[in-house]
Image (cartoon, rainbow, N blue to C red; front, side, top):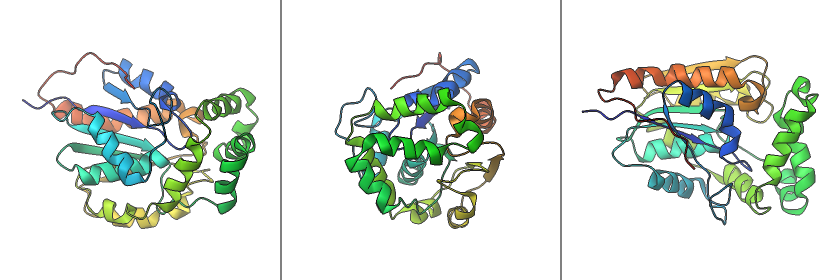
Length: 256
């Protein structure tokens, strides 16, 4: 009997599981079993923050039940972790959703330096780059993101950004992917822009199916700028795997 898949949500740099709050609620309501993780040094998981990306991928896989097929979904830094984890555990990963992703995922030296020296200014700069101009005017939205960034230990964000910047294995990992892939992109993303996506797309040539969906009115912070659209895209991607399962879904629960 095939077990129902577990949808694993992996947050990006400087965040924790709460960045997926809208999606976790919507997907649980739709009947999925959802696990929104806090990476080491973030949210409710003790630190220090972990690097490099390869070590984070191993950590994620170690948290997950070995008997369950996995739908891995990651945003930004989390997309690199999900990609690496899927390449390392092809027998366990049945689907891979990469949100706000590119490879390489370079971080400007000035931002790396600022993250070490001035967290508050770094958070303000991230908000300017992560949201569209229209959503920057929504002060509540930006303030919630600033509070989420500020809630993490100060040492975590520099480690996260350096991990993104130094990760070298993305294309090789992508070449090893043998499960369906969703690339969920934002048309106005200035941090992982659409124009930088082709190398990763090309490297995913051995995946049986690669879907790309572009959110027109969103930037990098797509989970808060377009929560319903992100939830709908993830649900549509997960549905065939649920239907293919011959066992009923467990009672939905979000854990971290």
